[in-house]
Length: 263
Image (cartoon, rainbow, N blue to C red):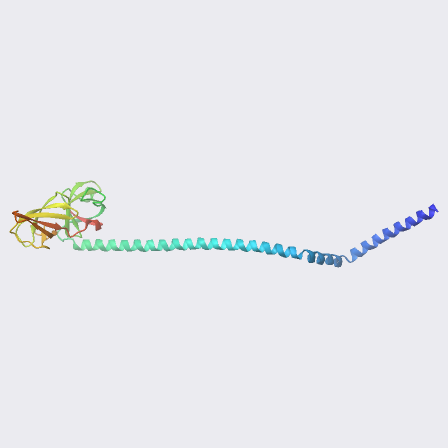
């Protein structure tokens, strides 16, 4: 009886081994189809997860692309703005240079033929230097001397050189407060003194019975006709034997960039 049980166990064992071997042969022979089936099953099961992952990943990718695109556009916009600003600055600078060149030509064109002049740039004006004085960029190395006359626009006298350095000079304007300048009344053979009042203004004192009109030109004495200023206001008092005429220079020094020095 024991012999029969052992024999049955061995038969069952051989059957199991045979089944396993058979299954292995089938799997090897038909491996492509089996794995394809498994692949399809896995894909079917995990497809929603994969699709969701692609959606999320794609969303972040699009956000990244959009962020990079906006950043690139901002940078490009700033670059274009800088280019426009540089172009506008170049045009403004060019216009300024052309304007200065034309003014220099105009000044040189008005220069008296019998006068030797040096063109000088203004380094400091009355609002940057002492009251009613200039500092110019021409000096002893250019032949400038103390006492040389300073002209605006080539023909309007505005002051004299008071101090000279190698590459620069100081100029005292005729309108400097308390500065006395000998002048003549245009059309009248009368020599008087004009006293500076500052800011391009002067005053002269005349006999009360001397008729003088507003707008009358006041000149520097000499053969050449150089206008110092014109009468703007007459101040008189019947009790006073004299009257005062207030003069204004035809030149606004604050607008000047160049002057000429008569050397």
